[in-house]
Picture (cartoon, rainbow, N blue to C red):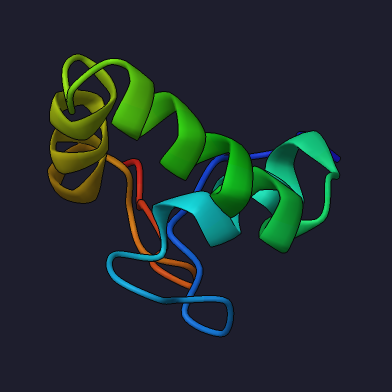
Length: 69
């Protein structure tokens, strides 16, 4: 089965992006959140804040099925 990136509904704090990413790369979500906050603060919110916002709109929610005709 092919792994897919999604926004998590169960591990959601803001947009669910990091929860879905943690499932995709199989790492603890708390560790990923801590790493993200450190990177966010050390880069003055750019580019990681911008990437996170883009991923909220681009990455589908968990359970959404894309139908191909």
